[in-house]
Amino acid sequence: DLVDQVPTTNPTHFKYLKWRDYSTASLKLADKIMVSTQMIADEWEKKYAWSRGKFVVIPNVLDDVFLRENWMPKFLRKRRDTVTWRGSATHEMDLLMESHRLHKIFNENPGTEFMFIGGASPIIASFELKNITFADFMDIGSYMIHINQCAPKAHIVPLMRNNFNLAKSNIAWIEATWAGARVLVSEDFPEFSKPGMGTLANFESGDRDLSWEYIKDTLLLSKVNPLRMEVIESKSGAGINQGMYSILKRKRIHSCGSCSHFARSFSLYKSSIENH
Image 1: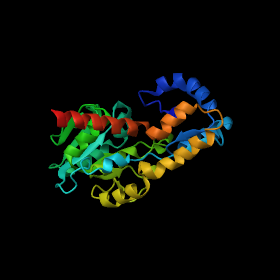
Image 2: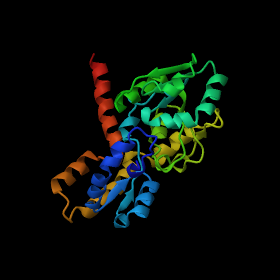
Image 3: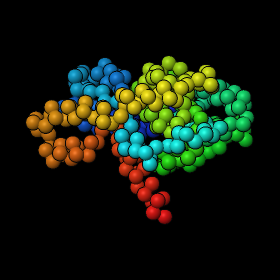
C-alpha cells in the first residue's frame, strides 16, 4: 500500500503517520524495493529523490498451489445468489462514498444475499435490509475457504477515489475470481482495469471466465516469481545475506506477503478439517 499517503479518514492514518519516519529510513537502506503496483513506485519517486531507480514492480499473484484439483473451488456447482465483500473498518469511507449506489443495488435485488466479510459495517448495517448479512473478520486462509463455500455469483469492491486507493493492488479481484465470482469495482481504477472486470454502475457486468483465463496466463506465482528472483540474484553478490537468499529462493516467497501466509493458512486449515 501507499503507506505514506493513508487518508485521514482511514482509522490507521495516525498510526502510519507516526511510523513514516521509520519506514522511510528503512527504505533508504534498501538497494531495491519491490512493490505491487506502478503507482506506489511513481508516488514514492516523485516525493523522495533518493528512491529513484530503487523500485521494482512485482504484481500480486495467485500461488500455483491453489490450482491443485483438490483445492480448486467447485466451479461446476451452481452459483448461489450471493454477492460478497471483504474488508475491515479501514474501508468505511469507501462504503460511505458508494452508499447510495449500494443501497440501490440492495433494494433492486431483494432475493440476493449481500454478505459483508470482516465485521458489521455501521453504514451497511444502518440500511436494516433483510438481504444483508455479516461475517466476522477471519484470517486469509479461512477467508478463502469461506468464500469458496459461499459460491458467490459476484464480489464487490467499492472504493473512494484517492491516491491511496488508486495505488492499491487488485488482490481482492484475484481472490474472488479464484472463488468463481465475477468482480464489480468502482469506476476508473487502473489496477482493476483487467479483462472481465465489471463495474458497480452495471450490476450485471463482469465476466469471471475471462478474468480467470487472464490470471492463469499472467498472474500465477510460477510466471511472476522469476522477475523477483532476478532482483534478488542481481544483489546476491553485493552483500545480501547468503543464508537469507537461499531461504528466499527455496521458499519462493513473493511480493504479496499475504499470499504466502494465505497458502500456508489454507493448507493448515484444510488439513485440520480433513483430520477431524
